[in-house]
Image (cartoon, rainbow, N blue to C red; front, top):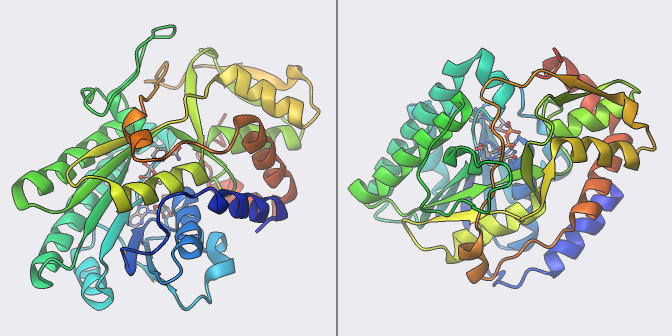
Length: 360
Ligand SMILES: NC(=O)c1ccc[n+]([C@@H]2O[C@H](COP(=O)([O-])OP(=O)(O)OC[C@H]3O[C@@H](n4cnc5c(N)ncnc54)[C@H](O)[C@@H]3O)[C@@H](O)[C@H]2O)c1
């Protein structure tokens, strides 16, 4: 882990105000070798001293055990290579590890890949979640309600898009109006998770986060793509609708929010996790170029991605009432993230050939 990140983690944990005593002794995390999952695992181990974390990841192109090298020997951490859509494997792991909580991060997560391979998204995000839920239901029946929580990680993108310049935002009750295969698959998964609550009484919660940024994000997403391109003196591919906006949250603030929902969230409910920090794609490119001391002429306008949403903004007042607010300032977080990519070329260079942004 980079020095800045260690500092950031320590500062961040110091600000955690909710109880650190683990309600959940064993938590099973799916997709923990990916970007958000690896941060969540390290966060959870450090803030819940008595807890054990089981990581289940199929190690698809975005799953990377290098992300967890620093904790692989920790006795409170265990890894299984398995697919959430493999019912037998998931049942076996649940029976053996007996988790009290499950946090489902596993997903196909890239909107660009969703254009070329949409069925992969339905398979993992919809069917995979359904298979996992059924394995969890069977497990919870067998263990007489040992399971306290199934938490599903979702996205603001299920709500569709907002017009630029509007004053509205999405609440937890906004209708799902997804416009891309990724967004639609995440919305489908949400419906199935809710159905397992209403029909079977599974103790679920769901969170919808805005765009995350931070270290260890696969180099196909916009911040690593812009940082890496700028570092290499290459052009930054800026979508034609360069005033389209995204709301940005630091991944550690997202992890803290998920932890809080696990501890204090009401069963059967959903929580939005946003920062209110909105940046246009153009502002993002300019910010990264400035941090790296590069000029704006590195920006290159490219055609919009099909189904390119204009804007999402979450109303996050519900989770704030539980006692959470974002703690990492955009300017600090972006600078630290870009510096992480600058100092960790050995992490991202081997991954470039797998990136779905390579055709820009
Ligand atoms: N990155 C964001 O900005 C963002 C925002 C909101 C919500 N989310 C959600 O958060 C979750 C994690 O996103 P991320 O950015 O870390 O994604 P990621 O692509 O970096 O990681 C996904 C992980 O899931 C694993 N995986 C994929 N299919 C699997 C399967 N069938 N079985 C087991 N593991 C599988 C991959 O190997 C990878 O390690 C996703 O559910 C995503 O929809 C992401």
